[in-house]
Length: 103
Image (cartoon, rainbow, N blue to C red):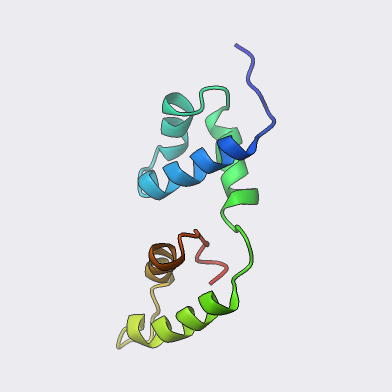
């Protein structure tokens, strides 16, 4: 079976939706390929996520302000900040997924 290599907006939306749901799963790209996007290989989905979708759009001023508010709250006594938790709180508030690298 030949697989398509070109992603469209609908496929991108499905990948983002599935990554939110299955982010902790070790075989998440295989699950997306088998259950939602059989026209793409797990490797294609992984590359699309890591190279294009994971980073998303730039942070807005409101999002930056919200991060500034969250950093002192989420920083532990050892001085470590949970950037992953901040990303989830950003998604809950603004419905936009940002990677921990960007925040």
